[in-house]
Structures are given as structure tokens and as C-alpha cells.
Figure 1 (cartoon, rainbow, N blue to C red):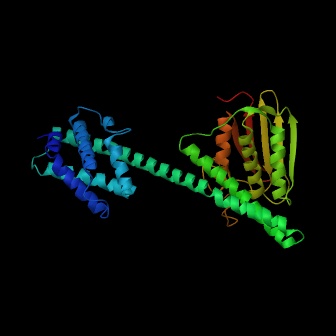
Figure 2: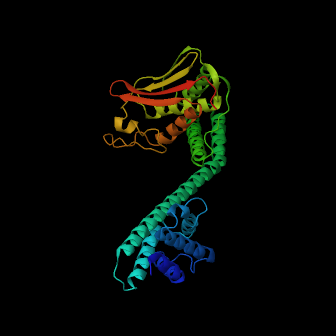
Figure 3: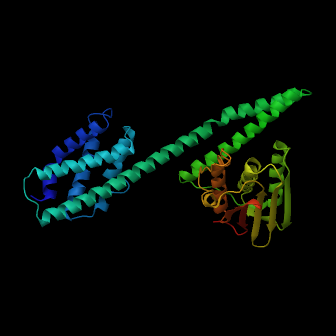
Length: 366
């Protein structure tokens, strides 16, 4: 009997052995298997048998709503990790091979062709199962991050109000005034982090970076952002240089977020020596914003990844993380700029410092 027919004739025994092996891999998972999952197991075996017989490509067994996806989703809900999922398919492969060997027939050319197609089918299904499982984990994580970012808003607002009240009551008490200022600055920084986190989760969950294009003046946006940052960082010098026509159609709030992230990163991660310089230059085609700071340069190998979400550059020489949490803010910058059909880049070298440059076209983004 050919392998495909042998598998179809023994669907029930193979499913029972599959279930037993799954319980052995993950003893505390739900047992017995739900009826709908056993049906999915049968569908997977039937698809493999069809591929072995050569009647249909294995691609028909994968994709949205397929038995492979349903099985992966059920395993995730049951507490299986990806290693358990892989081990389960390895056990299935072993079960079919034992069934074939139990026939006691010497292998011929047809048997070798069947085994080749069987291995290819299982490999394709396993790859699809792992990919779908990983996408489910990423989505669950992003939803969790979004919930955390949203739920932290209320206690953060209470902290900010308390800090403002403390400043009002401090009057001539310099210690209370200093404490209130620090609390308010910390609350502002936390609010910015939560903004980035919520934007990150929205972009990861597929809704993208939403923008509303309206007439805007980059000079006014920069003035407001820089004034706020000067109040929270009175010990640092922020120099703004503007030239040309800085008006256009952009999402003013989002562009303000870009400027705040870039200047805030320069304040947080740049060297204490030297000014933070913000240059804005515009013409009929668009505007260019350069945010420059002095300090230890970003290694060239890290510059290519600096806009990746949650990337973290660790300065081994200094023994600390100089760019902790930088990647999430810069990821948001890149998403906003790209939503405006613009571009962003970084240049960093010994002696010349670090410059983040943003180009925003004046044509409407679709």
C-alpha cells in the first residue's frame, strides 16, 4: 500500500497517537483534545496525504482559516510554546514513519518518492505553523503593550497634578520647589514614553500612523517645542536657526512629536558640553530639520539599526547604556516622517558629533 493510502486508512490511530504525543510534550495541557481540534488534526493529515499522493500542492493546507493556523492558535491558548509546537510535528513525522515501517515491505522507488513528498509536506506545514504562532505572539504582546500604555494614563495624570500642586504650595521653600519640578519633569518624560508606546502598538497592529494634513508653520512648531524643553532643561542651551519658507501642509501635532523626540534624545543622550543646535531650512519643495549634539558618536554598525523599534545600543566602553529606549522614540519619528512621504537619517562621527536630519516634502501625503 502506498503511503498516502496508508495514512488515510489509519487516520484515527494517527490522530490518537498525535494527541498522546502532545500530552507527553506538554503534560498539563488540556486533555482530552477538543473535538474541533481533533477534526483539524485529521484535516492536516489528509492534506499531507494528498500532497504525498501528488494530487494537490501543500500550499492549499496553509493560509488564513486553515487547519494549520487553527491548530497553532489552539496550541498557543493551551500554553504550548514554539518548541512544544515543533516537537509535536516531529512526533507526528515519527508516527507516520513507524506506521510505514510496520508494513514490513522493502522500500522501492515509489516508496522513496512518497517519503520525499511526505518530508516536504511536513516541513512546509511546520514552517507555516511556526510563522503563524509567532505572529499571534507578536500581536498578543503588542495588544498588551497598548493596554498598559493606555491604563497608565490615569495614575500619571494624578502624579502630574500632584507635582503642579506641590509647586504652587512650595512658595519660598526651595527644596519643595525643586522636588515639584523634578516630579513634573519626570511625569512629562513618562507621558512622552507612553505616547511613543501607544503609537508603536498602533503601527504594529496594522492601523498605521494616522496623520491629518493642514496648513502648518514649522517655525511656530519648533518655537513651542523648544520653549517647553528649555523649561524642563534650564541647564542646557538649545539654539534654533531658521531660514527660508517653513510653511507647508503637515500634521502639526505629529511634526511637533518628531521635533520633541529628536531634541529630547539629544538632551538625554548627547554630551553635556556644547549646545543642542536645531536648524530648519525651507524652500518651495520642502523643509529640512537638522538636530545636532556633541558627545560620543554612534558606531557606524549601530547607525543602520538605530531606527528599529526598541533597539538598544549599549556603550561597552562607558559601562552603561547610552541609548536606552532611544530606538522606540526614533521608530516613531521614522513612522511619522514616512507617513508624510519624507525621510530621516543619522550622521555621527568623532569630532563632529551626531546629527539627525528630517526631510519633509510640501506636497500632500496621500
